[in-house]
Length: 343
Image (cartoon, rainbow, N blue to C red; front, side, top):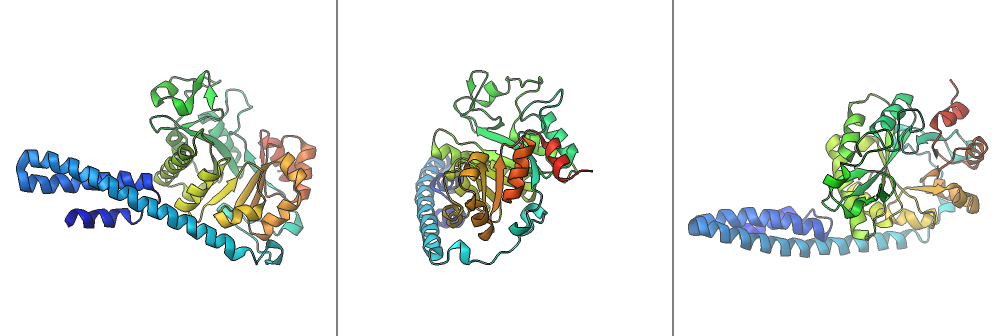
């Protein structure tokens, strides 16, 4: 009875079957070990631990699966609820992502600058490096973007490409990754190391964290979960915007952080398709916004933000400003700032 009560109390907040099984196994092994030691001494404790672990894992998996189904039903119902209330009928209301005010779309405000993989073009820097992050923070721009992968042994590493110097990050271990050197000689960083730099900085610059789309959808979800935990532990949830090509990763972040800024990257869905999922931004390549310029106003009617990548040419920056995007992700953050916010 005690074991059952402890499991129920611990598992009722689980979001999925993986988390439920892990939590259940942990609680079950502890409670089972305690009860076993009381009933049967040392050997009883070992047996109780094993029985409790197995019982807890099964119970946790079952409860977590039920929570997944409840979440799916909730999102399906939300989609049905808005079908008769399409975007053009909604009132325009300014949004305030991460503490920065965005005016209503008709005024065409200057877009905010996001440094793509940090400020990496200057001497001594490199993409997704400690130096690129530090230099972006020094610029005081709106945001700086990084990319994260989950290793086979569940370390969150920062790198853009799936394979770096012949090593595929999602298939290898942290030990193999930490031997890799970036173009400026730095070791490939773990996420927590860059978060420590952010945490210690008094820069107003926020973090735009891309959870990479892994080969398996569940690993994309796992990476999203691990990244959320790392950002939460660092106390940087209020300074972080989330982006991903993986719809599963986006949905996971929305479930874990209902108030977070979460944008989808792939460019294959209109804003009204994403809105019922809890995703509150689009972050699309410039070609997708050129093909579907109406998506900008549609997103704003749904109070969703619009980011465009990767825009380095001044003419294209002005074009996207005139279209009404909220953010420009660029490899030339200084150029973008000079254009829209000359000092």
